[in-house]
Length: 100
Image 1 (cartoon, one colour):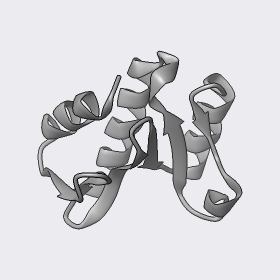
Image 2 (cartoon, one colour; image 1 turned 90 degrees about the horizontal axis):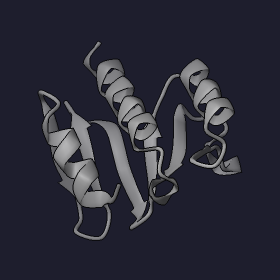
Image 3 (spheres, helix red, strand yellow; image 1 turned 30 degrees about the horizontal axis):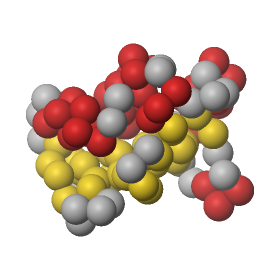
């Protein structure tokens, strides 16, 4: 999975719009973050804390919580670890959370 794949997937989610810059694209629903690129291989995905804990537990090579994110409802994802379905699931969960 790469940033083009992330963008293509986000575009399938109703109401999810691309913002940000060419170097740091992001996708939002009603100006609420769903997913943002930190760099070409790393994403920040908005998430509930319980979902975040499950993602980190189930896929520790893909998901993590840097110290700066511990107090926020976000998780970091590494794109090149081959857990594309888990990343798509996390993005879909973020989208659903923003639509509530």
